[in-house]
Length: 358
Image 1 (cartoon, rainbow, N blue to C red):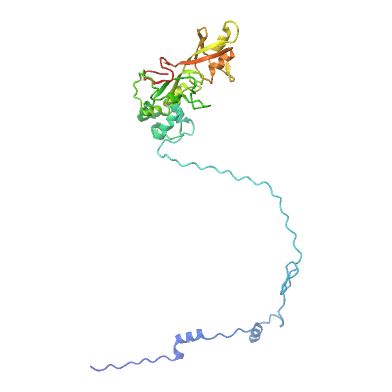
Image 2: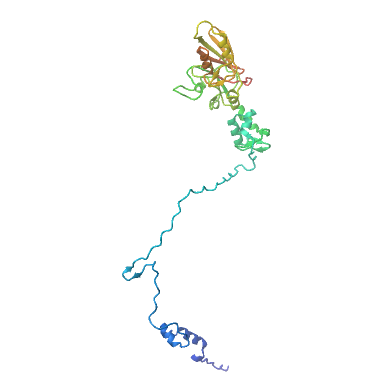
């Protein structure tokens, strides 16, 4: 096989290589800058800007300080300060409208702008007590116009309110206790070292003549609240209940339930008790500037009166007797509504029967 001829590549001459020419031009040293005057002389075509000589100094403003090597020089005349305007009263910030709180119970009945609270409507209709109403609404047992109610909701007076049967079942399990309160116990919470009457509601004090048929268990002895007052110096029938409906019926300014008392009295004056004073006891007295409702008052014997009232102000009978010259020696409540004290011994208690109503 014949040998191929060898090819030889000769480099281009430096003057003919454009790349090397550009590199050489870029790396060549730059000429030193010439003074401005020399540049003017080198360029005779440029028009002269002024006579040759030292550079002119710019005049200094008299209101600016002069500086030199020794430090700042004297200051010129100062400008008078601008008059400050007297601060006036600050304008009140614009009122900020509160943002509506986000709904927590989506899908439930929207609160009605007007009307009454659902809990109050339930109480007024006798469906429950106010406390029970709030508990049932929170548990989801109340519907208003077919939708679940929420706490604090308002509704029209004629709104349809439906109660879940679970609420009625729970309400039926709440009991009412009748106690023959002795003297020396207060009706409500302890005060002045005296114990509340509720401490007597124990298994040991349960009357063996109780005919209610309720089997006593520990839950019946909890959360018993007095439904009405009976002062520390009085004895007789005291109602303690877990049922808010009973409490609402017996206490409050709207109650019309009769309460019967036997009151032993002594006349401070001479001779028999005047009939005019008896008429005042029946109707015509005031307590704390409020006219009392009519009452039924009659003699049981020489020293005992029978009172039937439809209200229960604090120490009402004692204060009524004082206004007509009578001193109260003893007071005993024997009936509330159609429920009487009966043979229940002092200091003992029994359950309210299903056939008994106040």
